Amino acid sequence: MNEVFFNVDAGYLEGIVRGYRDGLITAPQYLNLTQCETMDDLKLQLATTDYASFLQNEPSPLATSTLSARCTEALVAEFQYMQQNAAEPISKFLDYITYGYMIDNVILLITGTLHERDTHDLLEKCHPLGFFDTMPALCVATTVQDLYSTVLVDSPLAGYFRECLSAEDLNELNIEIIRNTLYKAYLEDFYSYCQTLGEPTASVMAELLNFEADRRTVNITINSFGTELSKDERAKLYPRLGNMYPEAQTKLARVDDMDQVKAILEQYSEYKSMLIGVSMNVSSSSSGGNNAELSLEDRFFAREVQLNKDSFEQQFHFGVFYSWLRLKEQEIRNIVWIAECISQQQKDKINNYTAIY
Image (cartoon, rainbow, N blue to C red):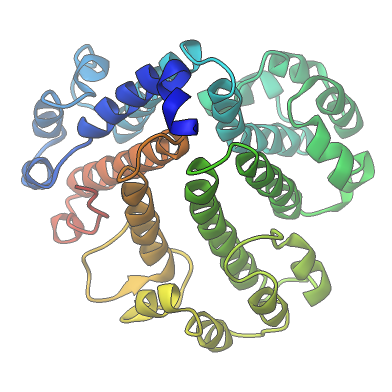
């Protein structure tokens, strides 16, 4: 029955987002980008893509930071167009997607407040998709307690703060613990909401969010090695969902080194194949790779791309909006990586990106 009425509210936007997907840079275009010798050459090649209008007025030489900012502007413009034309329940689904960016922005402001930096300057560094109506009001906060009270009352993240953190926590806890605590609550809430939307959205989003939960679980585990974070505190940061919940999460909470993490991941077929030829290091020097030795993060990026491509194989579901945004973000990481290699004369590493199509 959902398929019968889907196009009434969502048909136009689904057509739009599938059109956006068709505008993603393809393998032949990536080949042309990697053959560029200068940033001006790169800008010329990008003139044939969806980024053309955002780069056409930029003077030479084009800085990598400027390129990244303009590409992000293109992403934001397309996403906001969909938001402006969305009705319930798509509008709420799109709002949920932005909550992750809101968490990053609020964490940035909390960090600035803790270090007594001017929050007005920090607003310029916030991600545009993470802005909310009362966000400028956060700039009047001079203490963490004031910031907490403002966020608790006026932001869409109020529920996550209320359930997980107190004002004292913002002073006492490591900022990454606060970020992961909020993101855990967000992922669980987003997952629950998607399950109310019916099939096939529920199953498509379940697969995507389960993967994200697994990735965050592994990253939290690896990043906690050599820190003061206890194993019990580590376990509390894991999202209560994912393919590894709860059995593997219980095991990961007790591990002490990378070999133990690898042994647990190899018990899952979807992750066992990812580990072949992988350097067990969550940090990466690139956005992805065609190298002989890849980091675990590289393989997670590649796996994420494949899952998001697969979601476009089905129709009549909201997962395509989430997937397009993730693919677009990966494309921007690819472009920035290529640009960095060109500007730093590191052409031997220029092919270390995660191709999409």
